[in-house]
Length: 323
Ligand SMILES: [Zn+2]
Image 1: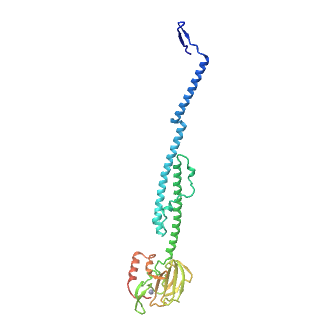
Image 2 (image 1 turned 90 degrees about the vertical axis):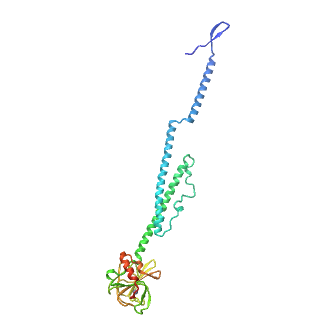
Image 3 (image 1 turned 180 degrees about the vertical axis):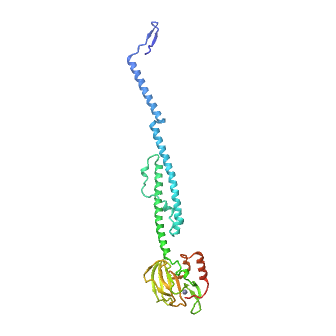
């Protein structure tokens, strides 16, 4: 209920009612409403600068959660990079070294992507850097995995080649131990059985009865099986590739033909005494790049350590060769 206001009229000495014009009332009301609206607007405007709405609070939480998850993913990426680095280290220091391949330099392993800025699409946001950095690291990681994978392919191929190489080089004794009567003479200075002069004996002599089987000492191709070389009598030459040739001399009989492919341990002929020979024995030589080398260095395939030492001892005794 509206209050009725009075004023004291001194002329009439009485209280009189204050009459207000209707237009004035409307004016006051309008001003009041306008001021209220303005104040309300200002209040909401100022408050909105400092107070979050429930929707905003939710979005803020979403964003914080996303940033946290990105950080966790980056930590996991650290672990993945560390694991890869371990493999890379072994790759460079063991595998590649073992197979005589050059280590892959760090710059090559950690190369990112050059040229156009592939991270431009992430720009223009508060979290641009976080997203761009994470993507960059993942790109480098992916590339490093590809480099490592290619390196392992290369190693696998080198290992296969090495296996072939190891199968090819002359590495076993050409006559079985149980068939040997004695190891007559090794590589080095020996007395010539015919002239009695001291001269260098370029092979090893294995004394064994006539007809004792002789085995190929490595995989290869028979290049010669004839008696047209002076002194060697009936002899066989096997080309093993990689610069290695093995020679078997003074044979009684052949068991292979020229151009025949042989494997290590294949029976290629029999012990005899043809050519410049004093008694039945196998004269065995190994060539590397045209030079005759000490064949004893290759006997590991079918000999135990003690057998090898015994062979080494006998071979180094200076005695008369059978040639
Ligand atoms: Zn000899």
